[in-house]
Length: 296
Image (cartoon, rainbow, N blue to C red; front, side, top):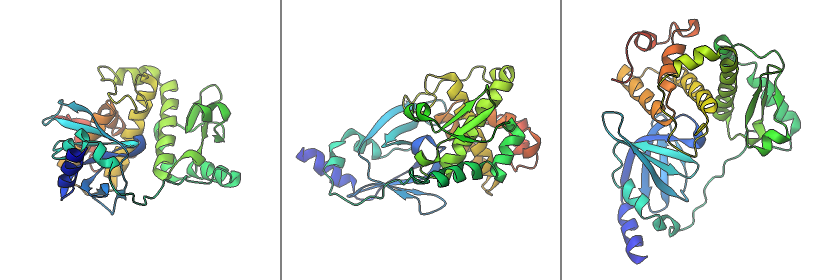
């Protein structure tokens, strides 16, 4: 125990690892993890980022499909992925060091709306359906005939944040169990992806030929092709929305797509397909995505 603690203290002096954080199953965010004497701190490349103290950190797997091996770590409820793990491998190999750190006050995730505020829950669910973001999804996958509803008792018991009910062409959400707007947007894209699956089954299956399964057993969609496809659809939408708002070099955007694909295989082919739709004709990457391979 003493040896592990001392090695941990040595690691705490300036260890920085660059990579991509995927919090709570959401698409990856570029940034860096700093290892210091109070835990692990993540800062995104385009802002102040988020700070957390990891209760656990483990190396999930090493992926060798790209030019450089990618190391995928589980950190609390998310994953951190990097091709240069550096001393993070040492931290993962000595998890007791994290347990021995001095207690620090860490911010807790708050729900998007209070679970007891029924009016706010309904207002949040209805408002997302009337946004420009929702309109962009409707242009790709169509709009449900029925008005949005709330997840019922059975769906909540199953841990679902959203449901698409094909027999009624309706969608239900649970904003009270979401931690922010990104999760709400992701859930909406995922559920409308199910609508596209139901109405264009042959097309989706044709696009899905040869797609590898998700490797992370805790990522939503693991072992379930239908949910895997819906996650890849949501990831593809997020990538196109994210890169449409930025002026990153093309090479950086292509690299970002590789990281999306690593976490949820199938994202790349769906990005290329969606980029051919009219709504994305003016996307800054449209020419590249619709004419050239994206994983050379």
